[in-house]
Image (cartoon, rainbow, N blue to C red; front, side, top):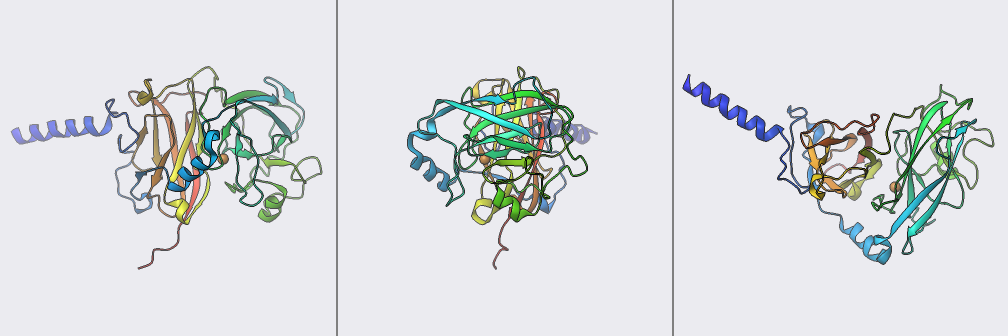
Length: 336
Ligand SMILES: [Cu+2]
C-alpha cells in the first residue's frame, strides 16, 4: 500500500515536470514540453537543436550591414477592405525603412536573393523577388481573404523589425476561380516563374491575363478563405520550413516565423511557441529567432507551430496561431 502511494506520488511529480511548461527555461534549446504521443516511431527521428549553419553565417558576413537592415513594407495593393472582381489578385508592395543595401531580387546564377514572403490566408508563403512588377495570386476563390507579407533574406530567414510585416483583408467577388482545380503541387523553394512553371507541368495552359507569362511572378492559389484573424491581437505567422531540403541542407532545417503583438517569455513576454515535428514530442521556442533542427528523417515531414500562453493554452486568433507546414527531406542513403 505504502509502495503504491509512493509510486503514485512519483508519477504525479513526473507528470508535472514532463508535461507542464517550465518558465525557468528561457533558451530555445532542449526545453521539452509534454509528449503529443509518447509511442516510439522511427519516422519521427530524434530531433535535436543545431547551431546556425556555417554556410548561413558566411552569407551573413558577406552581406555586411545589410543583414542588420530594418526593411519596412507597405501593401499598396490589394488595398485594405477592397473588393476585387477577378480571381487574379495583383500584389504591389512599397519597400522602405533602413535598408542598408537590402533589395529584393533573384540572382540569375544562384537563383537566390532577398525576397518577400507573401501569404494568402494561411497557405504556405510564396516568394516575391521583383518588386518593380506586381506579384500575382492566381485562381483566388470568391470570398474574404487575408494577405500577409514580410521581408526575407536569401535563406528565407525573416526580418523581424517593426514594419517588416503587414497584413490586409480584402474580398474577391465574381472572380470565377476554378474551384475544381484548387491546388498546384507545392514546389517549395522554386518560384513559379515562367520557366519553373513550364518545368513543373503543374499549371494548365492559362488565359493570357491569368497565369504564368513572361516577366510576371505569381502563383496559382489553393482554394482558401480568410480566417477571422484580428491584426491587433497576438498573431503567429508560419514561414519555414517549406519545400525540399536536400543532402547537407537537410542536416539542419530552419524553423522561422513572424510574431505580431506578442512577446515570448525569453524576450520578457507572456507567450511561447510550441512545435512538434511529425507528430512527435512537443517542444518550445521562447525567444523570437529562428532555430535549426537536426534529425528529421528522410521523406515527407510536417511541423505544427502554435502560439501558446505560459500554461500551454493555445492563443487563438482566427485559426492562424496553430499551423501545420509540410516539407520534404531528401537525404542520400546512409553508406555503410
Ligand atoms: Cu523565402
